[in-house]
Length: 501
Image (tube, rainbow, N blue to C red):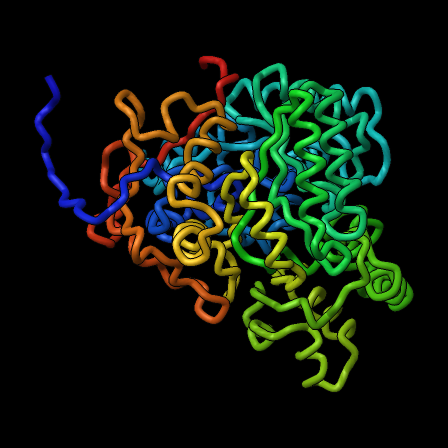
């Protein structure tokens, strides 16, 4: 006999779906500091995948922790409000479970081992191949992290120091991931000039390693890639036809989002954050950086000469720089009667590399074609820091349902929900999530297909969505009648390869 309900919800006119899975999130510290976390909970997100783009906070030692905190201040803040009482992947996942006095966290979270952090730990910031001993140490760290509950490994191959790894090194690490049933999630070597070659490199690398591949924020950006989404999809279809295990995620917007320092050429970042600041302070080195950015096209800007009118400042760490937020670098430079590089250099230096940006270089036709692909999933890539973050942090999932399914008909409602639920659950190898089915976790969303919409905009990016009145995690209401409850039902979701403690 079925149990008697303790609560009945009038769902007339609403659609019932599994909880949405954000396959690319940057809430690594936000979940620890913010019990509300409505940025994701109000969207119907019940699970986020953290540890993205090769940089996060486990595994670390004391030195590595200090360096990674400096490196990704623009993503997560400097962490001065966080008690970093863990050093391992297992310790971080345990911390999520016992956070806020043992209550847990706002939504569930899975974790990818960040390859850049692992390299920082074992090799440092040197732009060179790893020694045999260093590679062995990296493999040990990845193996330990997978056994402790990670679902895979991420890379940021346009970010230092992760980009210094060659394919042979990455292949060896992916083989470790594959042994535990995990997947590789690369932010690959170029999303601009050479993007197709970079995608092909990842497909071949994971084929050689026998590892599943999930392509992070799989866009075709910059002018050189306008109209080239079919080329990417043909590459993927060819690999899938041979039996490759590939999936991808995208966000339903055209601009990207990252840090300003990420635009610099990789040689400028060798040695770590303090070395970057030293080079910026030296006139000759700064001029060399400018030449690579504006003339040659730095690897940090994906091989494309930077266009300062596409670089909008979305957040700063230093309060006295707030006037730059919401303007492009070119606009701020024009107001000051100076060259854009002078403005950018000042920002990088005075903000101690903590500046975040929106990069307006995407193409709508590419966005629409890629999201139709059968292996596509949804990911916000949402950076929650800054005064003017990308609206995708608060709006990705209702944007898919409202704009792209209901208004534009790019996906049917049922197909759109599958892209946001069952397909990511299958990639994560979660046997009890992603469907509304007896015996599955009661991670559920009730939304109105006729009204669901993102409230966030580029002008007001922290506005919550509409049309999502109820969200449940493990059968407990985290959103009820459109309002956030005090429930903390989220827990760490450990990978299928995790071993018992």
